[in-house]
Image: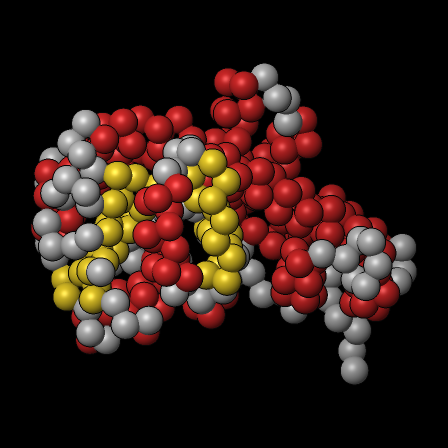
Length: 297
């Protein structure tokens, strides 16, 4: 099976590298010339357009910022739809609106091209380690064919329903992550402002009911003041916007998500949009006029 990969950003580049390590032949296309050069040096071949990628492969993976970019790459001029033969599979691993996934899938189906929406969770560290979680929507038989490819990048691969269901699951994931980071931030700032060591408070509560994967991933980085992006605030704003739009369409209010969205928007306007979403803590620090830090040794 020959794989195409379009979009070699923070997530896409390590995902492509793991596909290569698994022994697949890989054709790449990206606006990031440095990433293209890095993957071709590792054994991939490159193509100038998505159309050229699709013409050479059995599965095209896209990893792009949002719905408009996926539509342009898949359905636009020199797009995947122009190069893919009937029976080719498009696996969109971007995080986009579920309705957009369904619209793209319908256009591809008219040409005999299959599609899965397969967004991921885990951020850059798990993209590098190949231990992402993949949430997939689409036909069972198409999913079954792509599982080995997904497993080259992920520790967990779950089909959650038909096309669009993968991105519905991802929206739910992003709601939980955003609210969890905000809760961890608020709690640790409270601890510090009240005179306790926030690191010791974290150590005390992480093994109980309050403990979570999000807490273990983000609390140490907050305490070390490490906000270089594993997942940018701007991207989380995009995901929560899709979640809120979907919630309005289906009538499922998200009041807590809306509150965290306002926090993220405030951080964006304070020039933290390209920081990791763990920088949510900066919002609470600003309100409390305190900064988290580890105790001196």
